[in-house]
Length: 314
Image 1 (spheres, one colour):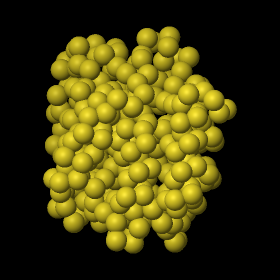
Image 2: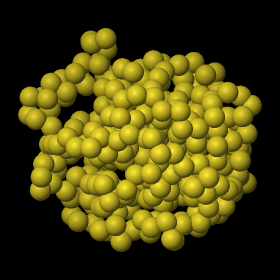
Image 3: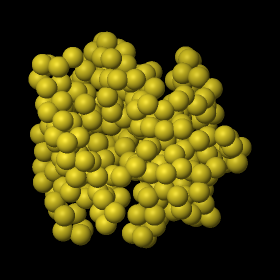
Image 4: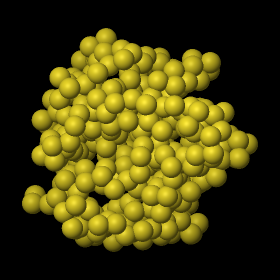
């Protein structure tokens, strides 16, 4: 289904989410990355960043981006669904809060709650409870947002795939594999090998900086970035943002794993080069918070997740 090499990263400028510019930008990226004729009847799952309804207009992948990508796949004959495992609440509730749900319903695009899971063994022997919907599709389409992150410094393409862990297992990984000697970043990178064939388009039109992933400040970056290799996409975006990749735990983990795409020298840019879109005032956290949740936060978070999903909490 893919037609581009792992080293290719597609960058394009998009100053705002307005039509028809958004539709044209999405069409240009996806036609360059995929073979549209191979998409007929394919089962495609869009995996946006739906972290929470709180401050969702900034913290989540923009609703217009989600809808535009869903429409593109439908127009090429694919069976499209949208799914995620939000930190709080349900995917449907977050999509409703950011204004995407009515448009998706009009298109007949189902919303998948990443609750049903399948246990997969990673290369290191660690078990990962991954969402069945993410594993059983023909194409997993990663649709993250450019954001600073208080624990990982940045959340881009690789980090967004952490949401393929089902429900409660996401905070549990923070507890079990965080801490000073934890393997959180390395395990997250290992997920890439067990997820199905995929590609990425990163929403960098309105990004989040200073802190994150929920309560940062808006940064009008005006960029879309795409590719079939999420590591390569992240490397290109870090260069565009002027961030030393050595300061990012996930980049280090990908480098330790010898994954392709960690150096600019190996990347190819068929559209625009990061230097053409570079910025110099994007701010990221200087000191990273612990990945491991404190036990009280873990318990409180787990209870809140359960209540939100059953509709008890508002």
